[in-house]
Length: 144
Image 1 (cartoon, rainbow, N blue to C red):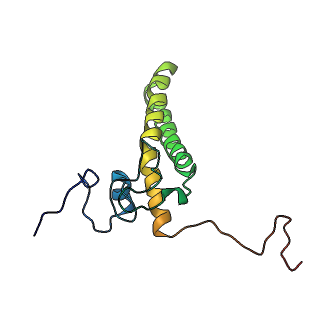
Image 2: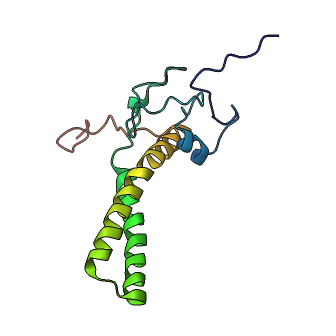
């Protein structure tokens, strides 16, 4: 029996079993074949999987991950900034130098994982846009 060919899409990736959303998001795995083909850049999805051909453009991740990260990380940073102010009373410039880069790095750094996680969730749940063929543009049904 011959050994399987390990391409660049398999290197360092978990096994071919069904992975959790967090594991697949961490490695940027395709939700169908689990190859590392989800991203074309740092946080830009590829148009389709190079291995199985799954069309990633059919998924609408939108701005949800960025909004979610901004709210969660903003809440954590605000709490930490208040704690630091009450505990040590540093000058204002310390807050600026500490919290602005930390917040930006956390949001940008977490964007790739949250986008991948949301796309994985859409794929697993077969999420799609709701369409009602009886509705028309003027808000009346065909029988009205």
